[in-house]
Amino acid sequence: GAGVSQTPSNKVTEKGKYVELRCDPISGHTALYWYRQSLGQGPEFLIYFQGTGAADDSGLPNDRFFAVRPEGSVSTLKIQRTERGDSAVYLCASALGGSQETQYFGPGTRLLVL
Amino acid sequence: AQSVAQPEDQVNVAEGNPLTVKCTYSVSGNPYLFWYVQYPNRGLQFLLKYITGDNLVKGSYGFEAEFNKSQTSFHLKKPSALVSDSALYFCAVRARTGANNLFFGTGTRLTVIP
Image (cartoon, rainbow over all chains, first blue to last red; front, side):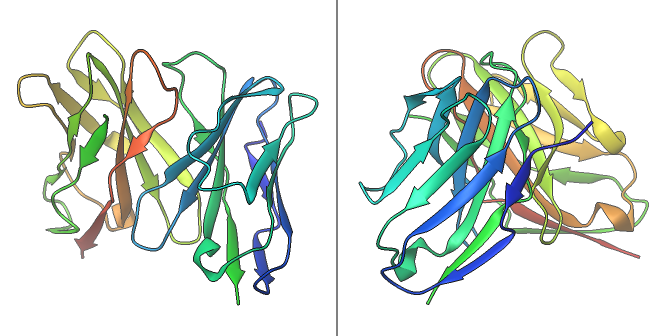
């Protein structure tokens, strides 16, 4: 079956601009996660959705970052007033929902802020 | 606090030889442990996980890992390395209670030499 998909695969923007990154999880997966991976690092947690609600947003670095999942499926990560330090690969993962369930990752969106 | 250490940034092994990629973790209580592999310009691909039961876990592509509670380790192993195993490997941990997100190590680059 189809895996997690993310669009766009690459995004180049200018400092100060607004960007939206989309994640389409595996069908039936109620849990959805956003992570950020900087060069040479492992993924770092941003936010976790269970259904439509953000169950844990403790990883969001500041209030410029926001994410939604209005219908409990597709999620959008929104970054306002982008900064050069936001440049990274943004990874989305989905899971069946239990804490022991495997998280399956999408290919990521590579964001470059000039 | 949860954390993962992958002490080797780079592991080189000859094709056909056994390989080991090391991982140690810190977590409150008993852990869930995961290994993922990342190929260039690709997302993370799940290899295997330890949830409970047998300490030796077998996963995809002939990989296995052994959970050692006393040493808080979860080393990844394969009896005979293939050139196609060359990639970036990430160990991740999650506590059984509390936060659902994964905590990742910084990754180990495995190079299998023909």
